[in-house]
Image 1 (cartoon, one colour):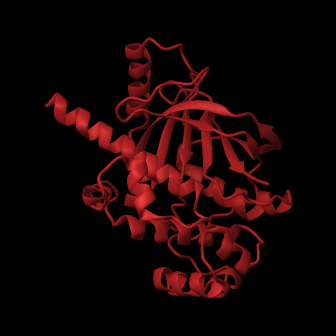
Image 2 (cartoon, rainbow, N blue to C red):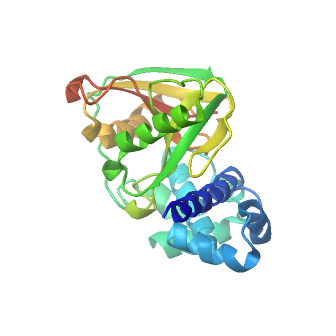
Length: 285
């Protein structure tokens, strides 16, 4: 059983490396043979293993990831459609339009102009929501992480965080930050719940050698709009809708095509829901 667990963890580590590469190179030509080399799987097994872990063929995953990135930029930025197409790896706006219609049944221009059209769930804007906010440069961070797939609301964050603590103990590493950092790669409004990806991270004081399904990566330095929300996690979707629909336009920020993140400032096990503090990091130019 232990060998099987180790194999599962090693496979997940290789799959994560491929996904991270795709996320960082959406605007470039992504060669499947190169992805197979990154995964360290043989070309014969590469497609089979990726489909087993992702729940869809790797080619479909790439197209869906690009299309969902386009949907976010169309809704939350003023970037010209042609620029969006080139930014996420399409050779022309017509190529993006064709794929976008296949996924969502509407053209990119129609989606941008029709604010009432919803791909999945309607936005909940709370004009009365008062969030502390600032824009600042955040330095590079070393993190260890475990990747979760599935509905953001159903993930076992506490259990996953405890696994990172156990990893620190087993590897006799210096303790990282005690405030968990979660990176959310997908927008639940445009990505099916079972395809959502979350990295539960611990910020570390130094580089760490990954092992099994515990990965390591360097989050590069970057500019972020940072919001402090006080209240129950249950209302976070409305908080995000308000940030994107109200605050980001008011702050005249341009979004970067990188995932958002949350840092949890207190422990939900001994904090009343209305007193929970969450820092929300939105990457901006």
